[in-house]
Image (cartoon, rainbow, N blue to C red; front, side, top):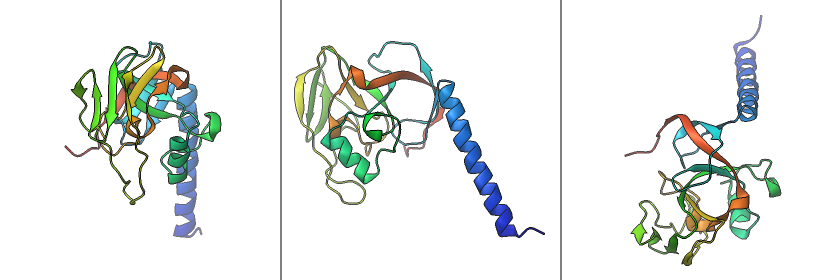
Length: 182
């Protein structure tokens, strides 16, 4: 007779392996599962669309001090991007020709202040966050990527603009729900 602990262990292991295999199958099928609060939690599908303002994108973090720090703090998982990081999902808030200001009060695009864009000075554990400053018109292949929900998200407030070469896919939400408190 099997002990209850052994049965639970086998069930948890089987479920974990099943979820891991499912995530690989979904990714190979052109889907992402977002489990972070930076965007609505749920299922996203890769779409063949240009990167434009309002798009959700998956991108590989560039190798920089801000992203090295984020890896050390556990904000970014390991994955198949250069430098061994995983891809991040964010929303495009500014594109080529947009005037972007990132300062201690938050982010403005073309003179419009973006909600939830005020930078925090420390993370939830008290570690000082990088403080990125920027005031320029975006170039042809530059994008401003932010969370559209979470004021605590690790986004452009801390790492700045992203080059087009870093963006891997445009993704569209298929089934999502918002875990953020209203």
